[in-house]
Length: 321
Image 1 (cartoon, rainbow, N blue to C red):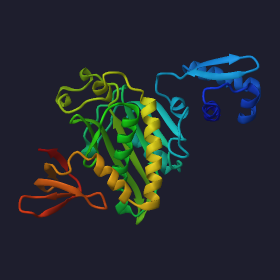
Image 2 (image 1 turned 30 degrees about the vertical axis):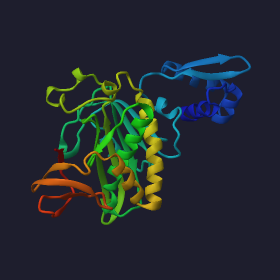
Image 3 (image 1 turned 180 degrees about the vertical axis):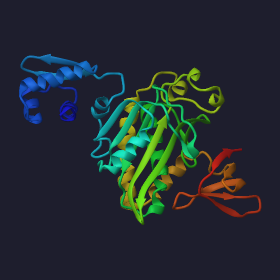
Image 4 (image 1 turned 90 degrees about the vertical axis):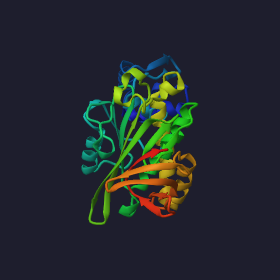
């Protein structure tokens, strides 16, 4: 019901909506509308009420919430169902449970704080209340070998969202790190649920350092990590970044399902920081040195060593020389 109310305010584009119109839209009495308005006020919304005009939202709460994301969300599917939590061990775990129980595609799990956040190779991801910690449930009808391409798609959507909401120039380091001025600001973890040769769901977990100060990072990562706020020099709206990401992700996802990976590949390469550079690739079987010359149609990194041999890198830690 609250989602319908917020959508009505969004459609009004900052104008007033009469109590009668809200009652008709929501299918309830005007007294029930008033009660829902009061609940929004308790959540921090500043709502103006004028007799014979109705209600309008003058200011949304600064804190992150499912309601704040829904108000102004410009998508048809992504993020229309939100499972918001003040604190969770892991948004990925909840997203997997929701996917198992039939959650709709585009369901977003988000937490203000994550106490057991993990990145690739089970590395700990420091998840303070000043960042974005979210997992998106997808149900793509694609072959299983194409699922890793969604990691690269998500990276492009995050870059576009950062560009939309800040003056920063983010770059992508293969396969899943977003860098600003050479320091990591975002990580992406993609996990798949499948049976036989059919994908049941793909869960994309995303962690973005938004409003952390340098003092918020552990000593071991202070030299390699940063936040949007540190780089921009002012606080950044987490809600705006999430809304922008969902909008861009939906556009790219629909393009991907319609035309395949090629247009996503071209966008990804335009943001890639490692292409054309000498890199060190640490894989499970050893270390390779050479120049990153591109990615394949499947999103596999191509490394050309000093002897001219080209290696396909499916999974590795990359260091740029």
